[in-house]
Length: 206
Image (cartoon, rainbow, N blue to C red; front, side):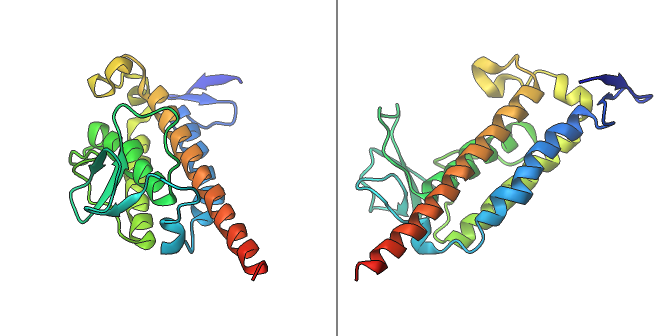
């Protein structure tokens, strides 16, 4: 790919887009054309569905059996530290909670001015609709934060909030988080397909 430097110092690819534009376009295309539309119509039964026994999920406080339950409100998320191998299968509720808090919320807090949040301090959604609203809010904050970085911001180290990866560039962090969003929400889409076809198969046996 050929690149050039504009009068404002911004590095641009052959298409005229800046590297910031390219990073944003990558996640926006997946979000707008694949991921988010596949989540429309998510119902509570799907949100909490456990396709195998002993799943990790989001549950009313006091009802979970996982070694640890995190959450500030009436709902808590199952987990264990260190994570067992193999880890339990996780529900759509768990996967959305992970994306909302562990992937987006904590990075928004570290880099884009969000109030601090972690798995123990978050108020998890009791319904699918509420969870999708939380997801949209954190994604919008992440997208705006990435857009605000510009070329200089993408080149700077991501800092001590990222631990052993502190010297990695913000561009590397953005690529990592975008991959996390894409692959975890793709898992959610697959679980929706599995739920639909499992219900259809069960109906056919009646």
